[in-house]
Length: 277
Image (cartoon, rainbow, N blue to C red; front, side, top):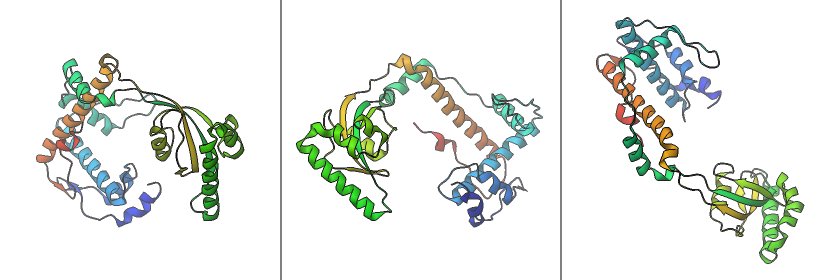
């Protein structure tokens, strides 16, 4: 959202947000909203209001229990505030988080095998005809040039490297269009979708449009990803499950505090909202 959050938040509703009669100032919520990424200013404002309500609930409980805590510092030397230390200590003391045992980790692994495989590796080359969609004349020329080059390659596929050196606007052109090895997420979604649909040795049947222009793509080789053994990912699964259980346990604890308090202006998410796979 960038800098637009601060200016657009004036459109957020100025409803009263309070915990046990103590209001949270609108400008405090607006400042906090800049720490919450959201699709709209209203969504950012709502997320900020919820965060500040949860903070107030936890601080109220820490003070009621007389919790005192020493502030800690992180690896970058940033030190907790007194209130942050109180909240951390409260949660550590009051929220029990059981560790995931090997059986639970194995069940998760068996139910989510597709998540635990190495990425496919593609060895590919391309010819880029650079174009911007907002420059219609050059855009149409780039499309026409890509179409013409593709027609040549359909009858003379061995000229791919030659045409890449002559026409490609990508630095890879000097290497005959060779991009080396690629994995998921290294190219644009359109490029990746076209690449994954190719068989080794094949070219795209039409120029592929991306934000950079038009590409003729050739797949040289594909190395399929392999399923990772359970022993290799067990620790990662255990950490993930522990984190998920902890978030749900904290949400349940906050829900109990909220049920004992009077909250105005915002609804808190329920523990069920955090129960995702």
